[in-house]
Amino acid sequence: MPRTTPPRPVDVEAAFPELSGLRRGATRLHPRRGTPTAQDSSVGGPLLWPRAEPWPVCTIPHKRGSGYRYTDVTRKREILAAAGRREPNPGPTAEEIEMIDGFKRGRHAPHLADTDPIPMLAVAQLYRRDVPDLPWTGDDDLLQVFWCGFERHGDTRHDLHVQLRWHRSPDIATPLTEQPAPEVVGREELVPNPCVLHPEEIVEHPYLETLSPDLQARIDAWEGPEDDDGPQYIYDLSTAPGWKTGGYIAWNLTGPRPLVCADCSAELDPLLTADQCEWDPSTTSWVPFEDQPDSDALWANGPTEVSPGRGRLTIAVCPRDPHHPLGLVTQ
Image (cartoon, rainbow, N blue to C red):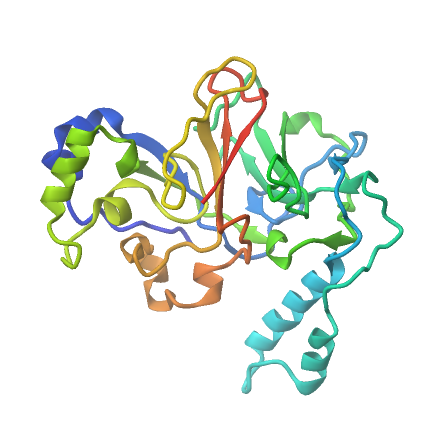
């Protein structure tokens, strides 16, 4: 089933014509629980990966033996999903609850040294036919996104480590059949559920604090008091919530900061945003028509069960060459 975002509550470009020159395309991915194949664009699904090519691994030094067993995370979700579909009395049995209670954090892989290579998690794959507006180069038609199952990287030692792979899918004549996975992950919320995608092209406008002070002041005056029930630029008229490609970054926690390419100093562009939810109480105007009867359901609003960093991660790439070092923004 496709997903359709309702029209914006007001035409913000009519109220502020200068925003028409700042509009930018984005694609809401609308992941929903399903059984994607390697031939599909997906979040958390099987990848079309060349058998002869080494699977991406993390070799950055950090503790990697303690956390949650990857197999426990996936098994717990399988149990709960099946229990939710059980009729006439949905919900886990006493035996299933006891099994789930045994899936605890612990030192499950003490044999792993801090620099042992560990398989990275397959987060998403996107085909050019489904998301044509990505910065594709040459004949590449497949983007695959990976991250380490631990947030122990970067200067803060609390960041994710992300890798991108670009492929030409017709060249993958012999795909890998069994996908590697780490023994242990630092948080359950870094393991995505298998989700099919329902890409939808939309238009976004810049985050409020990135606009000129004069335009910000005019928008504030136009919105009226904070307790006004009318549409708000930040929540309803600028950036969409949820998983998406392109568009603009919502800097709601940290405020805007420069994002420049480490190789050429170009300003980085958002490539992919991974979000813990498809909407929240302040962004319900973005709930697709098809999901409105079930807007509180986990399968609709939190289908991936992913919550990177503070809840939302944007991967940004260089507009001159997407193979240059990427940038990460957590909000």
